[in-house]
Each structure stands twice: as C-alpha cells, then as structure tokens.
Length: 121
Image 1 (cartoon, one colour):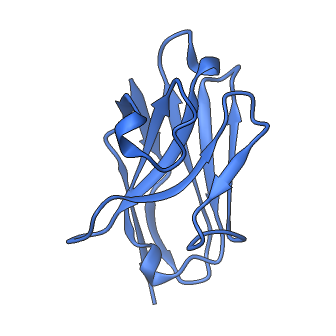
Image 2 (cartoon, helix red, strand yellow; image 1 turned 135 degrees about the vertical axis):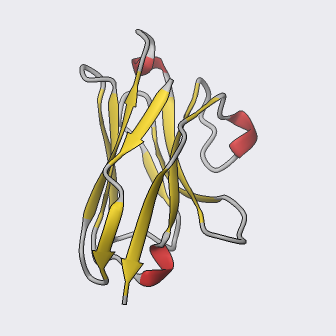
C-alpha cells in the first residue's frame, strides 16, 4: 500500500515536498515512480528512482526543478519540487515496480491514491 502526502496550495515560484509512504517489507526491492494527472489530461510521468537510489530520471517538464529521493529504512520516497508553476497543478501519484519501468504505467503494480498540488499564479 502506498500513501502520498504533502500536497497543497502554493504560489508560483514556491516549493513543496511530497512523500509516499509504503507498507510492507520489500520496499527496497521496488523502483518508485512519480506521476501526475491534471483535469482532463492523461496521467503524465514525472520521474523515477531505482531501488538503490543509484539512478533517477525526470521528465523534461520538471527537470532541474525537481528531485526524487528515497529512504529505504523509512519505506518512503520523496518528490521535492521547486519553482512551481501553475502548469504543475495536478494530482500527484507514486507507484512501485519490481522492474525498471521508467515511464511505462503498465509496469507499475502498486499505486497510491494521490495528493493534490495546486499552484496559483
């Protein structure tokens, strides 16, 4: 089970750190991904981190403004977002995969319920 938190309303240029807490003992075996979905749009890849934190990949839309990290001892993955823009407004989801899924939503077997991020101009 995955549970996101940390969303909210922020002004453009602000920052947020999203957290995704996982239950279970195998968290360190999973690659973790972050996705987002804005109203009326398809779910969009934000970024991903490997199980051992040695590789991260970001979508061009957030590259340079976002950092994904994880703490396997706490079963938690984080998405730090800086210099937020109104176009970042969306529901943000974390997801877990036992393979290196990157942006392929079909390869993620576990999904959280999402947390709303709203950025005002």
